[in-house]
Image 1: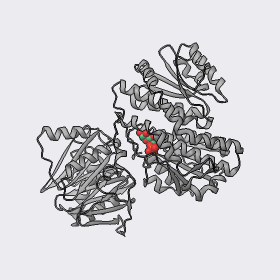
Image 2: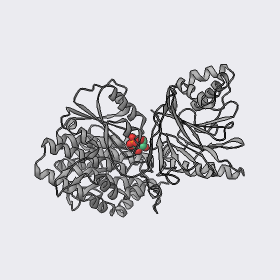
Image 3: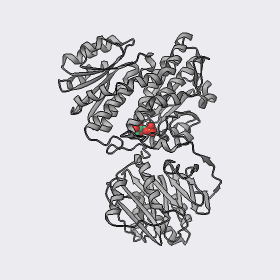
Image 4: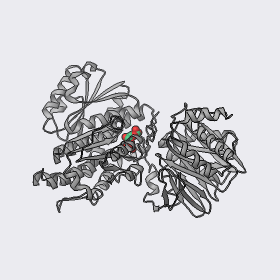
Length: 613
Ligand code: G6P
């Protein structure tokens, strides 16, 4: 969480910082601030979004000048979201200022020590402690700022991506990272630093991804990288593939809607070059060297958080059903703290859109330390998780900016399907005809998603009827149980309506007590082997006068006899239903949230990239 951006060059820094912060706002929007160097070192910051910072600057007739600057958009960890806790933070003598993404875990003893030495703190943040520590070291040991940063970082426990600006050196930014991501954009005589490449791409395509425990001293003449142990490093400059238009709304009211509508393309991109039904080939290139390991795996342990965890649950059905490999799906945050048993022959599969989720990353490191083979499915190219795994596949869904994940989910499930199918092929756990059928249907999915998107008007109509409900229940069975969880999560995240996903048959063990005529129940009731069972579950809801919104297979006549409203999706092989069934649930949440006046792209308290535990 938290987005950081910095600039040094010949242009005015403020507009670059503001634009960059807007791109990074998905990482948190509790407060925003900038520090600019123009003879003076000035910090401007306030509670709220980047737009609030702009208003504050305008209202107070501030001229935010300077060709060196740092900016921050915050997701609060230590200290409530208010003006004083907003970043940047000054050092004691106000000659240094810092922006930080991460958590300094041992800030409390460091703070006490500094207080004993006369330091006075203006905020409740861990970050301010770090910049005071740097100033203290610089003063006491009489070293330059970069050396003081290096010494300080050796005393710090926790995660950080930081950039420091120095009033006494107008030609320098100092950046460092551990755990949280940091990218340096290499322009001509100008440099950019950011949490990801999105604020950088319109200025330069050449970037360096800093590694953990590296410090970069960035001057107009070049970048020097050292480790915190003082070893000189030669950074690898890579070229960005990101396109600027991918970061714009492209005529849609919200990024979330744009991303929902992008799914025919993103699903196609996830399959590109990996499947050819004419030749009977499914191959996921990124994991080629580990296919045998996967094929022989005694168990696959899937790790993820949030929506990625839901994709993992679909993965469990896929790998077990198609490739006959036992799967366990774990919340990364639980896995890492319970001394998990990892046996030889287990393969870990970590799923993450951002590739930066702190719990997933830590779980990977733990499993790695236990000798496990780790594969990844990430969306963001070059992200920390993508780099921490032994091998992996990108989802190629393109940048996802709406905080609620949509196209990343369907792309993750697509890649999981391809993986399961390719292993099934090698293990010969599927008949030739089933294998061929699934392949053909996979290739037809983008067009079927288009058809689902055409039901938007009906979904909007249904949304209007239920927008004032206070609770929703989502039910699904088999492959669609995880979709029920995901549907409920989408509604919670963006409309703030309480929603629960349940396996349809489990309803009678608890949630049925909640059902009355006020309770909308969304049921995924597509035609499959347990269709009749789901029909019985629908009857049970109806008997309690619940309102039923059913996702059904095109042409279904049975469910509509009982359900209050139906939304049709094309017929598809059971294992591909999650991809199609997820789409109407995304649209339903979207419309309800918009009708309730919620900020769908930046829901309260959430962030897209959760880089704290
Ligand atoms: C946050 C986001 C979710 C996402 C989860 C895991 O909670 O708001 O949309 O599913 O993190 O993120 P990851 O990037 O690891 O998929």
